[in-house]
Image 1 (cartoon, one colour):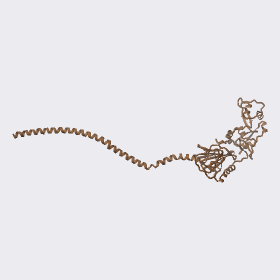
Image 2 (cartoon, rainbow, N blue to C red; image 1 turned 180 degrees about the horizontal axis):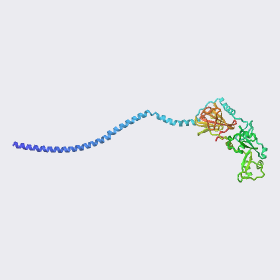
Image 3 (cartoon, rainbow, N blue to C red; image 1 turned 135 degrees about the vertical axis):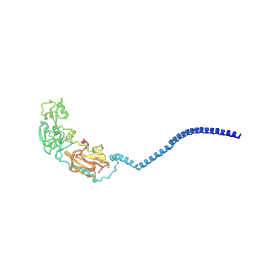
Image 4 (cartoon, rainbow, N blue to C red; image 1 turned 120 degrees about the vertical axis):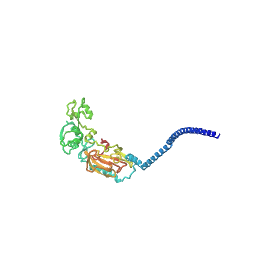
Length: 402
């Protein structure tokens, strides 16, 4: 009985063992599948968690660190930024400040002695003037050595005009030749000989000199003696007499002498080379004109001897016309200044310079640099004071500038 029970127990154990082994294997397979799925799920979640948090934080920390280093390096050179900006902007602001600062200038006390320097400068201009044995005014009228205007001989106006030939000699001038033949206006020789520029005249050149002042007119188509007389304000009878005409009938191209007629002022200045070039080659502001004005310091009415051309300090100043440097110096009124003698008694004064470049006695051509604009002397701001003299008499510069 016990044996049977043992056998039964042994079979039971076998069955039990087999069952347990089967269940263990099945559980192991199930566990393996569960573990695999769990591992995959956990692994995927771990990657996403690592990317969204840790990697991002690490990346930000790295970028912040790099930015910090860059900021630290940049801060060392931050002072260069305002310096560079200042260097770029300073020329503009300095130029604007200096250019037209006259209204901000402080009043100064001018010595009474300094006021005499205006007259001293005028005397200096006269001292350096050319020989005035014969000279002319802006209209071409010739004056004698004593400054007396030469008058035309009215008797000759009733006689036929006579032309003489003259050979130019070294040292001759248009005014001198005109005076030698009794002419009262230089435009006669210029017009009759069709002289474009008197400086082109040379020794040995032949000139035709009429016995009276006047111009030669070429008759146009359908032009009559009456229309010509009205054009030049000359009587028809004078035209008949001076040209020895027996009839008023004219032909196209015929030459008629017009007694007493003269070139207009612009044509005369062009022929004489008297159109001055502007002494400044940049844009400037005309702050004072020639003539009467209120003194910028005292407010008292006074005569302004030239024009004031405001521009930045250091602006180059050029000779308005070719000539010889008569004087350079300093005056408490005009500051640093230069005087140039030109052709036929013209002179120019350049004042208030910051620097004089030209030298006394130097021969300069038109456009030669003679100095730099400044604020020296009796001045309210950086500008060029430009004066023109004709035989020691003041001329409005604006009437002779090109």
